[in-house]
Length: 486
Image (cartoon, rainbow, N blue to C red; front, side, top):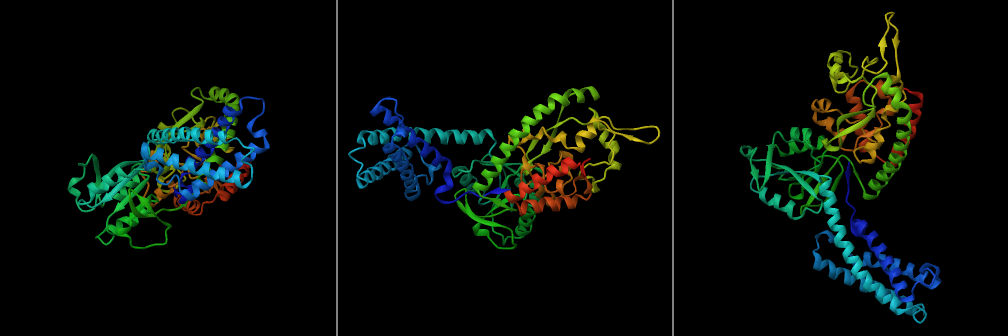
């Protein structure tokens, strides 16, 4: 799911929060410098408590009307210092004007106001520079967003330069594909590898880690529109340069700027920063609570699992996450250590059509599962954990790590991912989840993978936070009833 960048003064809400905090800290320091530590806290004084509120509102007004943080990531040290001085001067002048109008100038120490401004210039400037550096460093450590460029051969160098020069979204260029020169596949252009032919672009996107595609070509060119539709079908976020725009469907479109160029962004669904923040906040809260429960469960279940089947308590398995990025999913181990080796021999008993996922009515690889001589099927701790979805609890650690969400789509294994058709990839246009629409709509009773894809795509295109809460509450009921679990 694509997070739409907010416009206007709230675009850099993180810088605004730092600004508001910095001004208040400067005010407190200035107060104690002037008044000393006399046992009276600055906010205990009615006069200075009101002034602190005025400074807060004053600061917000300056940010809004003066657009203080417009292009903040593009500014160098000198420009940042000048902006900080101008911002602080406006805040101080408005505060002085308030004191004059409210006839509080005699009672209020002008030294505190001047000291507040001086301290704020230094403190705010240093924090802005440090925060920008930390922000860029953090993005690099997270691997940044992976951007694939699709361009004509003649404009390839210009488009690469544009992304590098205007890389304020911290893109990692995953490669470039040329629409009119397949002979350069495998070679490099300005240090960026030509990763595939244009005809193979959808297949490459479906197999590799690609978060977003930047398409800077004319849609009137032969076969371009066909390939563009296939890329859109995969669910990957696509930025189309407006010079090549030609409306062809009813998918959500957003006009924005990427690499210094106006583009038309096509995506399966998009969220605002506020929506993404709320979803992540809920994930973190739920992840913390779930992780605490996991630790408690491990104390009791760990010895039981080990006694029933000596080996590790937790099971780590490679899965495919958001936009094809791989990660290790964590579960309580419910299968014998040789389960993966025995999987191929049981494929003929798979309930899911086309082998796109693996589900059995009675899986002998599960700890404690065995068929007695009289044909009776006996289950053990492994099946009990699965029936009540307790084996899923360690995934709350994946949620805290940002690899998964509480609600999303089921992450496929690499061998399942290799069998995906292009439209199946749309399932991972959002973070995988511990639960999801498919799980509460029948879970293992659904045996047609296309129905799974349909439900997941419906969830993504119609996502709301309210729907997430409904799925979570419904999941709790499904888990307690053990309905559809296998």
